[in-house]
Length: 220
Length: 384
View 1 (cartoon, each protein chain N blue to C red):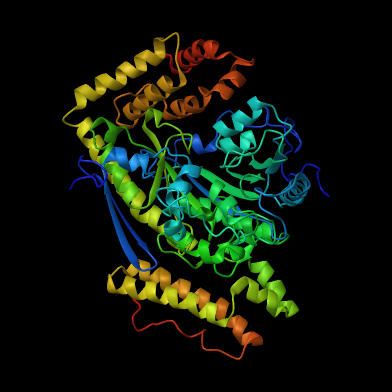
View 2: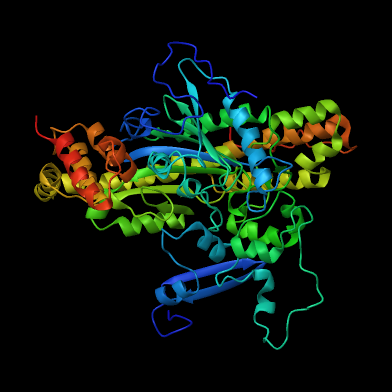
């Protein structure tokens, strides 16, 4: 296959799935380097972020259409820059460094950040694993349900997270990767206990999250 | 606030530095524990390292934190770290990096206790300077567990051990994390998990890495293939000193890239049970060729490397690393029998600029380092 930018042989093949749309690129080593798709193992992390999170050309995939607009058509000058109320960082400022300004930036830039994070983490979009145990215990013992929701999310969000793990578990079983399935089953059990118990504590009327492990499909 | 040295149940150590003492030659054992060359699969795996990133809730990240914020974050974390309960004979050494000399900071980098950026006071974006308020706590005498304060994230907890010991390292940082969390509120998001300045670390904030010695793959020309396979498995491959460093001596660090969507246990399992054993298998297979069909040629190569180290008068760090890597291969393969592997590992650290100066007991110009380095190698590897 020929490089799509020159006549050389394409040796780097990239597939990006963004917002459900698949896009392929086939480049030679030199054009790939120019496009920021370096295979250099010593690439500094800041460059990696630029090429990996902000798109291969340093462009935010969300803004690709805007990026190819002719310069005579400036992008909506009256549109206020997206800014985090907590620290004042703008989204453009984040793109410059690849670093966020404060915990609040994750919510302030959530809509644009979510797909980028998902891409950087190979599809991972919900945290699975450890959580701050003492903080959660304190909130629960004080009956601070708002804070518990901040830590664990609301009912719908919790259900989404459990569902994501259930799907991974089902996939592992389908793939006959039983060791992985066993780990996911244990993880699901832990999450069900954690996320379900908050609900049982009376944060909401919904229930039923505590006994959702699909033992039928799980390996013995 | 408790800045006093931690009580050390057990025997007092007369030369123990106070927590405020910057790293100096009295602060560390001669050789780092993680370079002992012991542990599981230590023919290929030099060391294992686990690091987690945490930020305090209620404070901005380092990117936008004011100097006052940074000082307060430093104070809060330092107090908590110095208040940790220690096991018998253990103590916490605290180093204020903004007050330490460049040589002291470099020695900490060479011992892999702090990152290069932390030594310089810089973020990955390049911003920052050496007077940024920041520090590191190291649990002695093992020098296995450490905590960087005000690096790119407020806290980066690390454990490093010899051989393949990722599960033990994870247990170390997990328990340190739990201890710290008893008195600190960490920034945590219901969807994104532990929040970090760089979104590539968000979620578990967990980075697992192993340093592998892969001279077999290099000499049989299969390294590129293995390296690409590692990349395809979503891993980062770097040199001896981590990000941006060259793989002198055929030492490579591989680590996970994703931190969100997989639990700590799953990330550990993928690297520990699947990827690392595969790489070890490739390397052993390549070595079997070198020690089998190509035994004479391999013996010649490693013996020449040892000969050079025993007789050279001037040595650059990269050349010395290359030669030490070959000698290590010779020892593991039974071709070199008169040099203990620990001595080679000791030299991997000793030949680095800051350690070389500590051993020499004086500041050395780059030009003088070559002769002192060669002298050190001659002395440590001499016959008899």
